[in-house]
Image 1: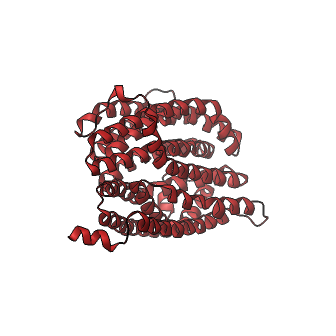
Image 2: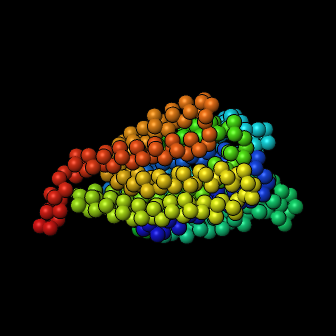
Image 3: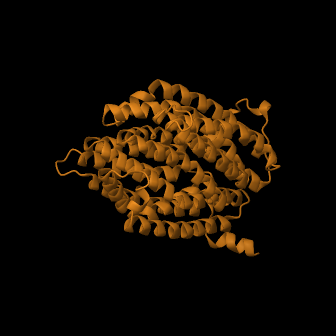
Length: 440
């Protein structure tokens, strides 16, 4: 499952890498503006997680119980919620998104590029919700390969549109930063239509029932209960990125561009460990629904070992030669220096981040993501508050931001691991009992 999910995540992230590659040819101001406005992606992703994690867990547990009617109920209701969320995203984005970009960018040129990109990119963000609902329902049922193939085709379309719309290849009408947003939105629209037709044809368990889209608030409450804490976790991630952009703003567009490139690279190289964690959640959920608690524990052990091995390898790569990853996006020495420093320092927390993801996937599978949210919320105290205080000190440098980030992730890892084993004891009982029962 992780192999297919990993490929899917890679191509999903390639939306932003391709945009960044062509936008980087427009200069540091464009990079800074697109990177700053791209933070709204985390806000939309936070909202989409409310639906996607909720439907994945409920469908997975229903499949584990062999309850087909319940699985279809939650799949249909998640799609109903997603349509409402998509409409709200468009309304809020066009109303307030421009002011948000202005507040984060360091100069007028960066703000103009960020606004142009955001307003063209908003349709893609709105479509993220129904796509997340459908793909997560399929993931809960154990289906990942068809969605990977579709996302591959979608990103290839985006890759073909990007140079045409950004640089004006073949048309002679370059749209600049706005072209990057439109390339993603057009590709996402076509991909969404294809997913609707694909959904009932790749498995026999779930169907799309238009007459079942009328809200059933008992199902919505269950989806929200599971998905809201994870959604708030992603919202906290958005707050953290906004805090970073705020405190590095005085260092200029080069600093914001360097962090933007470094951040995108880090997100991309996290994908293999994220894929393992994404695969673990429905596996844990199905076994939790089937009351095979020994397999739930084993899922965490395997996920933690595989994820840690992947992250250790990636941390060595970033620590030895981070410039190898950043040079395709810029040749500005100042931007490269910031990106390299960022990747070298934060690479120390890669293994800890992998363990956090592994623990989070088990909380999702068991249908209670509140402990994971509690651990993530501590970063408001261990990162956001210290970095805002440090930014007011005369000795403050970019280096300090990255160091504080590493310390906060280590603290989060320690807490979430303790909470996970505490939840195991409460929900699964003593470790030996399920194993003995299974052997019997």
